[in-house]
Length: 75
Image (cartoon, rainbow, N blue to C red):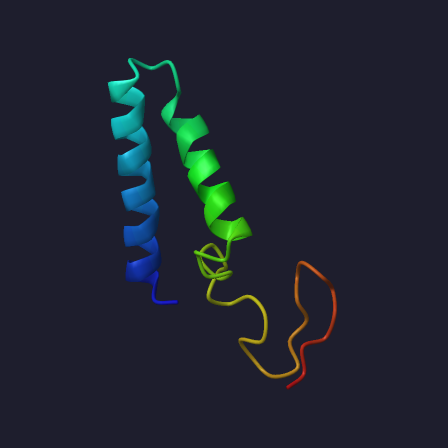
């Protein structure tokens, strides 16, 4: 995913969550609302799985070793 698109999606979610927080007079915090939006988005595959993935993770170079799973990602 292009970094600018990922950034835009994340900022839209934070804007919506802040708006909901203001409308409910902080009964629901913006962090809670954003967490629920992200949870629903990832569980329903509405968001791409690489929304948060860094560009240099998983198969960025040949024969690299992934830092998270410690497996070789030879392509």
